[in-house]
Image (tube, rainbow, N blue to C red):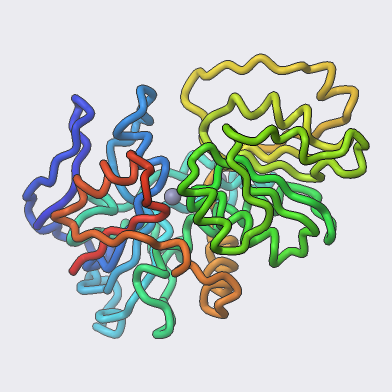
Length: 342
Ligand SMILES: [Zn+2]
Ligand SMILES: [Zn+2]
């Protein structure tokens, strides 16, 4: 079977590997689809590489085999979404609500998300990280559950009041999901800022709020000097942390800045700490999603509260996945690309 592998020289290669053999408490799925995430792109193209060489984690598929301990075949043929990691729910981090910091919260699928077949480990199975997909949800829609869940987790970390204004830096698929959530949660005004004109145009077409090219327009002029009109919440949905300074300037007194995009490793930003202090700015970060948020995202997509189809612009087969990575990295007309096991 085919699987996409990140090699030590940071090139990606579609390799032919033996079909995995499952243990008694494991499940084997046939890949339905897997989204390409910004973190996958960074793993391949950025200098700072996470320790993982696994590509793809926004996974859906069909159960094709279950281990002996499941006695019976009732699981086979079920369409599922898989959360690729799960916390222990009992450690110091978990009981303090920092479940995504749990030491057990590591990748638990094999060989990776962009693979014709995938083993779901005993840990994933025991922690109920496998969600049956309703018939109304396609595999590719299912692949949007994880990114949406991560956004939902971010929103849980902030104090948002209906009618608040939201500014989003970076309107790729994640920024767009945040803008869609902002609408649902009742934001008064949503500002979508990007330096990529394609993305600005895309958001304009989606009617997501005030969409501006941050390279062309002076963002400051949007806001009256009166603090009352400054955004209550700024979401940084880009890995470009140079916007942090701007965010500290723009945010209203007492407002929140959510760092959502993953900064490159060891990146340093010069910020005016006095301004953060005197404006009582709250800076929050968020990482990944737990099964609670996965469940919420699944419900939102099922009820079409959020139509993720609007974001999926490109679909590729596993054989085309190398090319897909290049296209996503180029950021021309791709918003969200999904690998589909045709
Ligand atoms: Zn992701
Ligand atoms: Zn834990």
